[in-house]
Amino acid sequence: MSKELGYVLITPYTLRKSRTGGVLGRLLSTTGLELVAARMFGPSKELTKRYADLIRNNEEVWPNIRELLPEYIEREFAPTADGQCHRVLLFLFEGENAVQRLRDAIGGFEDSVESADTIRGTYGDYITNNDGEVTYFEPAVLVSPSVSSVKKTLALWSEFSKEDSGILNHAIRLSDDSEIEQTLVIIKPDNFTFPSSRPGNIIDLFSRSGLRMIGAKLLHMSLEEAFEFYGPVQFALRNKLGGIATDRACKLLKEEFDFDMPDSVQEALANTLGPAYGDHQFYGIIKFMTGIWAPDIEDGDATVHAEGYAPSLALIYAGHDAVEKIRTLLGPTDPREATHGSVRKEFGTDVMINAAHASDSVENAQREMKIVQMENNTICRWYEKYFTT
Image 1 (cartoon, rainbow, N blue to C red):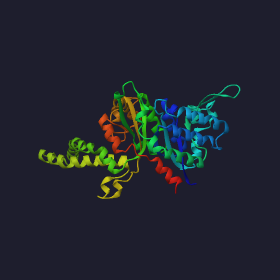
Image 2: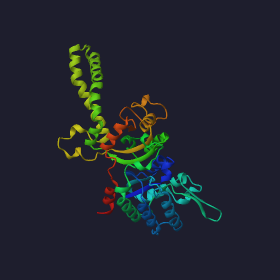
Image 3: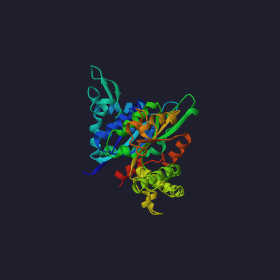
Image 4: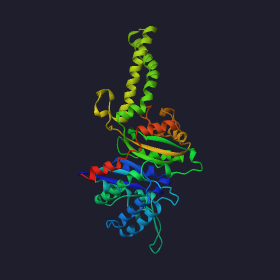
């Protein structure tokens, strides 16, 4: 069976209630599909209207829902009277029978009555009175019933992706806008080695911050991006690890040969072995984030600029004291030193495989967002790959 491309739209209500992590965790762990793209939208009136009309005219949609859902979209997706947009998060998934697998995981609208084994059963609502009239409706997520519907829907959202998506700076309003900070989180590749709920669980922990997610991108960090992103770390590793490498080498020589290294030789070793060991550790970080061992790549090789092989999920959070709030929930670099309930204590292994990265200052957040090109739109590329060839 050939691969398909499917999508899931996270509704504004689900985002506001910080249920995004739970939904993503369910999708990844129950479908076995690969997450290939993520994009935050702030639908305009035009996109909202055309999407609602698309559903009104889709005979594959259950008739009752074909009347109810467009009204919901027009009410919940459109910007407010003063121009503030609502957030809608689009996830793309790839895999065999992807469209049906997503539908099975999400469930029908009526699942919310007594079921909790589907996403809608847990997070959605479809409440009727004794006459069968719907009194409350919240679908939680939206998905297409068929491959042909996926094509039409993604064609529409791709058309509006340039103007209606990206980093939604206008999706958050505080009493003093000057107090809003933005920070970058990267859910690292160790959480994507196999389909699991780990990425969603990590998002759930970050939701305790009370911040708003205003940007998302499925990232395959290139060597070029990784070297720029982690460049400042290389110098620190050379200095920090020089003494450690020398002490270990001297200890081994003493144990194996009963030989005490002269001070002059120790100093020379620290100036040579130390930087080499630091570089080795640095290249390990680069490989972890890209899937590529950099020393094997020759100068001028196009691989340096191409997407890497290790997936990670980059997210932007915004609000008061965003940097500090996220760093507190993340925990220190070494998971062994992290407090219980922090991301790194729950999901980290060591100082490199430590679940997630978070910017340590507002300035570094802006620098890092630029490096990983958070504004870069990959939705159109996936649509074109599947539906325009």
